[in-house]
Length: 83
Image (cartoon, rainbow, N blue to C red; front, top):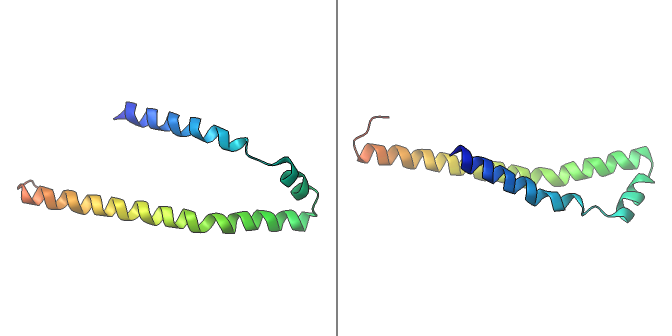
């Protein structure tokens, strides 16, 4: 199980590496040349745009874990195992 988790983590890190090279030099220059207020507004905008996907993913993972726990409990009760 630990080996599987380590392989999964390594694959995720290696797949994320190309994402760092996707920054646009023109976008970076435009954002950097704005005032401090504009830069703070861009940062806040990024956070606002990040929150809904993060919330949906968190909710989805929580629901999947709850479903799995409930299913395991029902299967154990069917087979006469004590929880």
